[in-house]
Amino acid sequence: MYLVRYGEVFLKSEPVMRQFLDRLVSNLYPRLRGVKIRKVSGRIVIETEKDISSVLEHTFGIVSFSGCIACEKKMETIEETVKNTAREFRKGKTFAIISSRSDKSFAFSSKQINEKIGAAVCGMGFKVNLSKPDRKIYIEVRDMCYIYTEIVKGPGGLPYGTAGKVLAEIKNANDVRAALMMMKRGAEIIPLLGSRHIEELNKWSPFPIKAMKLEEAVKERPMAFVSGKTDKEIISDIRKGKLEKNRHMVPVFYPLAGE
Image 1 (tube, rainbow, N blue to C red):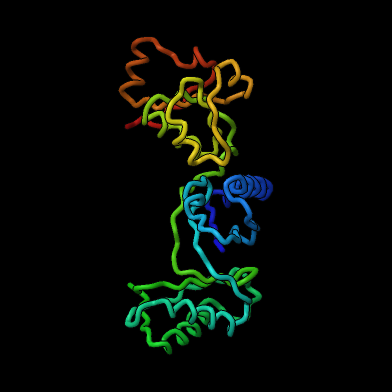
Image 2 (cartoon, rainbow, N blue to C red):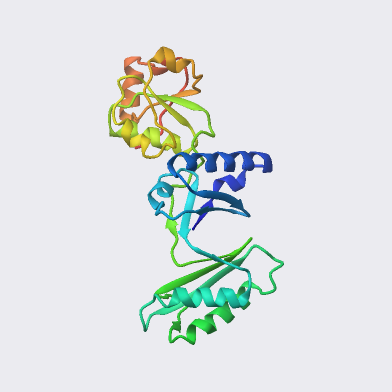
């Protein structure tokens, strides 16, 4: 089971947040076969028998995730589950319990959970170190109780496909970087025919990205063209009178400007 966290989506209004979360979930399904995905308060929970870390690390909109164990919201069950987790620690290691409680109907506060579960782990021969523990045990009380020991960083940003479509002519590493930066802001990339390195973009896309002729791409109603040009190249183009928007008939974005 995986507990998935998202960030910027929280800043949206309630209807838009639901829409963005639905898109984030739908972006996961094409690359995760045979999984169960559900939304709980502030989290996405994925049930699977496979290691899906690589997919989650390459899904825009995910801030972080943790492989976890879920159990009933009963203190006795939580204590036993945490003790089973702690048995995997090497003897002599220090630990810290870090709990949070979004379900305020749960009888124990976060502080009480820390104290009670911490005492149980101390009884196994481990020592508490709240400043620099060797291992951390996280407890989140939501619709169920989720217990985990690691937090893996995700790419962040907005779910892919939530910010319109942009054209891209991908010829070098800078063009790839620029396209990825737009993808991270939710834009769907349409590479023009002749583009290279599309496989680098496909690592981050829920569905295969295919190059199109300009005439076909325009029918997709792109809102802009993204370029990987840097300051010096942009200034040079201006001096030479080259205007990319005259060719593509849309505004041009330069994510790498300033480098």
